[in-house]
Image (cartoon, rainbow over the protein chains, first blue to last red):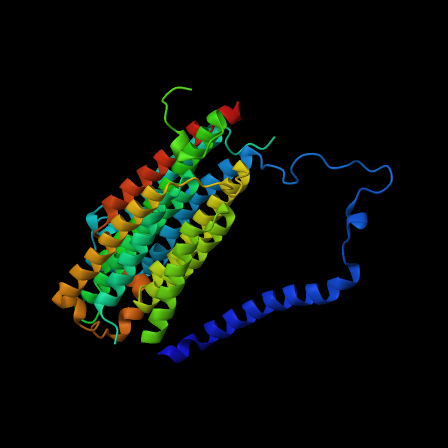
Length: 133
Length: 105
Length: 166
């Protein structure tokens, strides 16, 4: 059973090796351009930097990121639904009941779920949460 | 030989690590991360029990569905919780929980 | 198998300790990703492939990115001077060690905990299908509640940051 995971292990090794190689090679070959205080200072009439070097992100980014997480969850539910759809649909057809009966609950359940999240999407649109000025 | 106990103890230890983080750290974001650790520890014992409590060679998938829902709720909770933390930071410029001791100003 | 379990449990707990013990919030967030990778590996060892994938996809992929985003947004510095009193540390450590030892004691006393995990049939690897079959038959109503919860979360996020939207 463990043999099935050898490709995963190989991929982990390759990914880790690639990252390590990139770091090590940049240290080895980067030595020729070693930094010193004179090189790091502003050139001639260049401006001396003021304040922290890291700029803060705009709040717009985090709103989009949070909305992404919420709609990411929606997609996660679609995955098992897509895998089981054929089987559930075949079972429901076999029962031969009305389309609005309980055997089609898997379809109407997902429709309802997506519908509720569509309302959330419309709300976000209406409030301008996705507008980018 | 792996037993149910192995997973339960691993889960309990992860929960304890999260617990000590909530007790000792004062940065509200770190506390929130530790809460997520505790939630994941609970998920681990749920999955271990679902694996142990099998019927006809299959794990009890009710536990897996419950974990699925818990992960979903946790994601929604993180989105709202971080929005609250950002709103708090914008009005008071603090992330230290010991400094959050007044209702107004 | 047992060696792998100890390895991944170690990765998980080391990541968890990294969250608690490091000073820089960014390091904490990355330790948490490591912890969740170990946890996902444990889920996969328990034949919960869907949950393991979800743990990486949702927790390590989306939630931790959100945490890192907020850490960068708020421009959090490492806590330079943690004036945690000795009393707090000793009290917290005592409380947690009592708690952990209680858990271990209860698990040791549980007869089921000493049994090996039962063998599974081959179809246990189709756990996405099996979970889905259950979720879309017995759990259709909870699914709607989750939908409403996500709607509430969307509204909450937008209302909480409405000020910025003018």
